[in-house]
Image 1 (cartoon, helix red, strand yellow):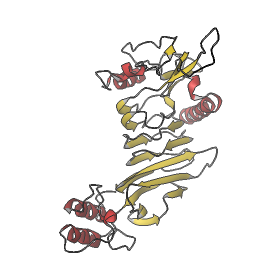
Image 2 (image 1 turned 90 degrees about the vertical axis):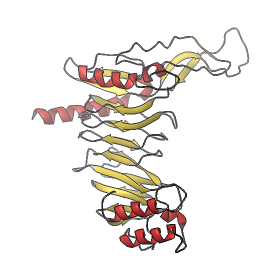
Image 3 (image 1 turned 180 degrees about the vertical axis):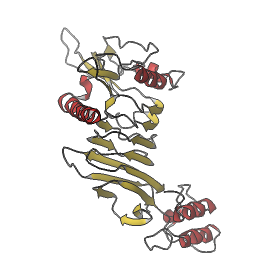
Image 4 (image 1 turned 60 degrees about the vertical axis):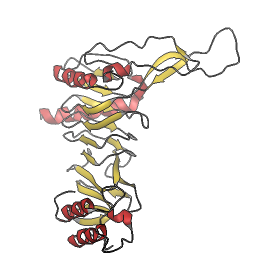
Length: 334
């Protein structure tokens, strides 16, 4: 009964947070202190190396003002602990606290936009979007809400939000260096968005699903997923982004289930978006495809569609491609 009540509370609070307040409303507000474990996980991420000798925490405050502009508010500096202006702790009482993480904050200043003159220069909020690096690991924390960075903003390579039992909303779109994101272990996840990035592996469990979705990519391409419970409570759109003109489709348990680049899924399962490998064009990946690819790599036969055989994206058809296709056909990968 306790667990059920906690799940209901987590879902309700996460939904209320995201529905009522925009992402910028949380920036810079430190409403309470997170748990000791939350502090440890956040501190570890802020201490990771970013760029130019800065840590991620220091990069948050590495403000670059547009030419001709200025800031009138000191954004502060990283003090070495769990807190930066990108996180806040939301709590309704002494017993329940929830983390919220964003990837931007605002300071007062001027962006250098020309103006018509007058006694005072115009003032406006400047949005600061730090570039962060490495793996973002917040698994097991009290994270309830994560917004998305701007397109191309970060160098984050992996996001782990597993076992964040109160997690309600995750958005992490258009990040060119992030290949994996996982948000398993929450029954409160009413929104999940991981689109137009470099993802090769995505794992999450929509709140209305009995089983998780485990997604992966095989070949020269990437994947994405979008779920929004209030809008489509039992639908998840899976997206495939080929990097060459070679798409076979979505496979489940070795069987082709869809040839669509955007596949609407209504239940959990393990699926693989296959970009290439179907050398004989029969809609399946078999040992025959591996043999044909091997022969093509040796110049014995001419490949009709080289993009279909170049599954590792090296722009060459070689033995490595044949071995990858062989392993996929045997169920060793994917």
